[in-house]
Length: 155
Ligand code: UDP
Ligand code: MG
Image 1 (spheres, rainbow, N blue to C red):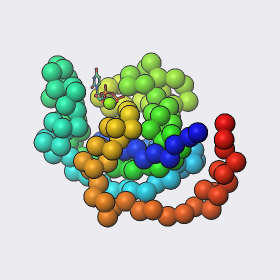
Image 2 (tube, rainbow, N blue to C red):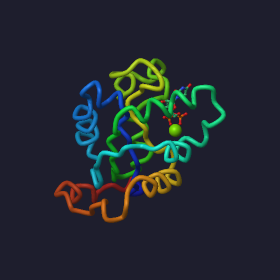
Image 3 (cartoon, rainbow, N blue to C red):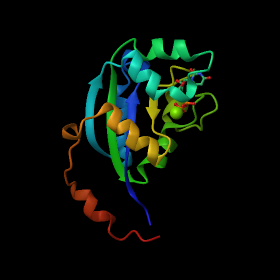
C-alpha cells in the first residue's frame, strides 16, 4: 500500500536566477503533490555544513556551499503517496546530462552544482531536512477535493 509521506525540496539559486521557480513548482503541482509549506530561506554556512555533511570531504564542497548561498533558495514541503521517491523521480539524477529525459534536471539544466533542485533522498532524511528548514507552524494541513479520489488505490 502507498504511504503518505512528506519530503523537502529546495529550489537552488540557479532556479531563481533563471526564472524557473514557477515552472518547477508547477511540475510538482501538476503531478498532484500537495504543497504544505513554502518559503524563501537564506542558507547559512552552518546550515549547509549540516545539509551537505555527506559531501564535506569532496573537492567541490566549498564551491557547492558558495553556490547555495548566492541568493535565497525557495523551500517547499511536499506531501503525497510515496512522496520521497516520487519527487526524486520527477527531479532526475544528480548529473543533469545523465538524468532521464522528461525529468526536471534533464529538461532544464546541464551542470552541477547548478542542477536546480535539492530533494530528500529517503524518508529518514526527509524528516531531518524538513525539521532543519521548517518550523512546525510553517507546515499547513488542509484538504484538497482530489484527496477523496484516491480511496480506490489498493494495488
Ligand atoms: N554536486 C556537485 N558536484 C558533484 C556532485 C554533486 O557540485 O560532483 C552538487 C550538486 O548540486 C548536487 C549536490 O552537490 O545536487 C548534492 O549532491 P548529492 O550527491 O546529494 O546529489 P542529489 O541528492 O542532489 O541528487
Ligand atoms: Mg542528496
